[in-house]
Length: 402
View: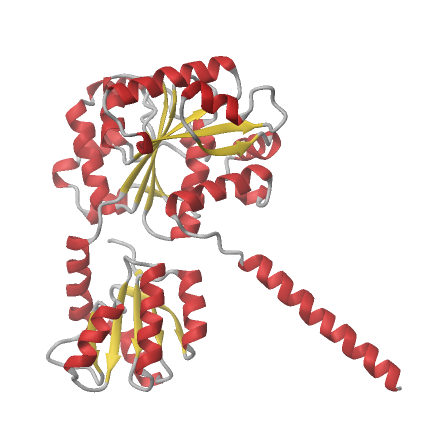
């Protein structure tokens, strides 16, 4: 069974809220009902539900404005306008504001709400954009590809809260299961064997879901298992995954072969990991030249400097001159949080949130998704500080009066 989606209702009408909750209970969990449109936007921004019902009966303009804001923030979510009467002009305005459908309340027994939502969801699946394939790789071992790939997947999930899949496609020495202390489970080889009968139910009941929310396809335990995978299998696998996932982060490891070339070809972006050393830069330059010789556009290949040190003799500008390309991002040389996370079998942010490496990977995820990092924690701290300060000033004022 596929996991239930999350839903939110924006309304003051308890009867409406209860009826929506009952009607959609088989496919979605109602995680919140909010009366205020301003509060609703912040709640939706934080929780990122799949289904959003907005009551526009009492305040059409505010409801439409909220829909426009939500649609800009979450373009792939389904929004339903709850209205009290048929109005052709209002229906048109609702659709232009980003609503998926216009529904009358009280609901029509001849057309149950659940059927309307299911139809909208099916239509959305048919029209939704294909997921993006992001490959993390290097042309030299020991560059930190796995650490960056899996922690980027985590931060993308935290920002985007959609369907994010981490694929360990380093078929010779995949380490994601080791880094996360997981038992080998459903692998690319299993998926390829199931490809002809693969549907949403089979996929999501087979792959691992990490507690932080992203999914994982781990590498096969036996190296010889990967020998049977063909280039055609690889193309078919990633095309299928694109239809189910929003982001597919691929740990491709190091090196270049016919099979890795197939993955590079289908990728939307290639993140090439290198370090501030002459051997690493020269090795990366060979792969960059190869990419351009086979016709990859410059914006497809993005350079990430790992274990970056500002005082290193080889600076970012020097590397850019050597590889004839701008650096896309850098990850700080922050050894302890990275090694401690591996030893614990956990993600960096679990015990080292706010460390230099965690902040850099978070910034990388923000740039990839084009979603600004939500600084809610800092906001809450400032609010608490302001509140405590006001209490302190009030106490002082009362002391002076006494």
